[in-house]
Length: 120
Image (cartoon, rainbow, N blue to C red; front, top):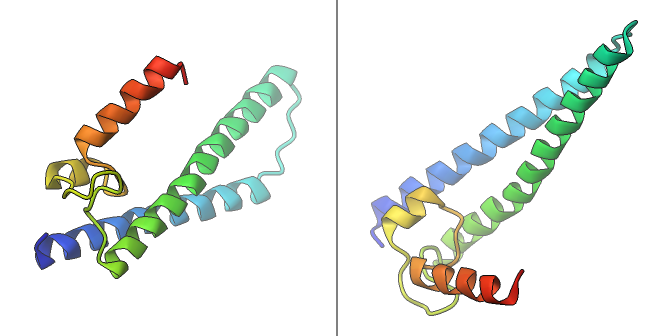
């Protein structure tokens, strides 16, 4: 992979990481500042449902942070863009679609087929 591609993906991953961290900070601020009292139980239920949904999103993003950090570490180690299954290069279009991926499209397709057969 070209040095310019590596730099592009490093900047992309760092940007994704910054966006997620900003959203997390905003969520924390919203939840700590929100001392609203609801007279109507339906309003309270709606607010609680919204809050639970937001927390589920942030939990997914927390897991994504780990994957982003692992991808950044692979860049540092010189392993970024190499399939961990077969050792072949992962295509740039695939990396653009999912920059934290560790599998080429062929190995990922095979993994999904195996999961489908096993019923995972």
